[in-house]
Length: 97
Image (tube, rainbow, N blue to C red; front, side, top):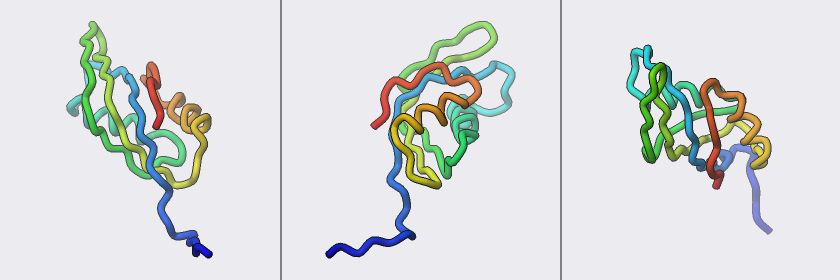
């Protein structure tokens, strides 16, 4: 019989997202994207793994990034989508793995 523990960390979520970063920010695009994504409810940490694309616009730059998220609780894919949809500037979630 396997022994489980409530102290085990929740498994991370990987995703590819597109997020809009205003041009008037003081930090670089990756740092700003991490800060914005970490505002979602129940997020412990967000790490940008890959930069898939950059699209400069007049008032903002849109970037597509691969991310790894560590949550404070277990979430379904639907709950992950809802949490990320609340992030300011998030334009799309292309994949959750």
